[in-house]
Structure formats: C-alpha cells, structure tokens
Length: 93
Image (cartoon, rainbow, N blue to C red; front, side, top):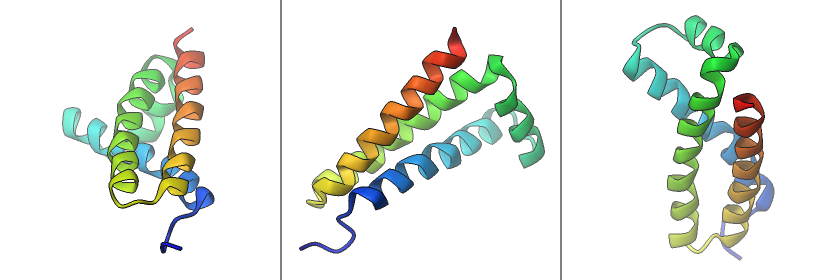
C-alpha cells in the first residue's frame, strides 16, 4: 500500500488546492489583499470565474497523484472537482 493513497486525503486536497490557486490567480491579476479576495468570492460575478480558474489547479494535483500511482487520492480529487464544477455552474446562472 502506498503512503498517502487515500480518497479522503485526495478529496480534502481537491477542495483546498483550488482555493489557494484562485487566491494566487486573483492576487496575480489584481494584486490586492486577502480581504479583497474574500469579498470577490462573495460576489456572484467573480465567484464563478475564480472557481473555474482554481479548479484548473486540481488538474495538476490529479496528474501528480496519477503519475505517482496514488489512484485513490486521484479519485478524491475528481470528486471534489465535480463539486467545484457544480458550484461554478450554479453561480454562472
């Protein structure tokens, strides 16, 4: 059994990494503070694009798990990506 090959770990990392990625994406483009990022995530107009851009970081995490043979963790990342996709669609309507 491989270390860190757990669906729960992949799911939790899959929920955390897009938020960190969206924060870095927002600060790279706008260059503001964490408080302004929180306000942007609370507005419907900016929440959907930030969620979509953050979910791209899950792709990197997914392939890292696949290439290292941690398939259960990759499955957790896919589940959390579906949740982010559903939220992005909900906020874009």
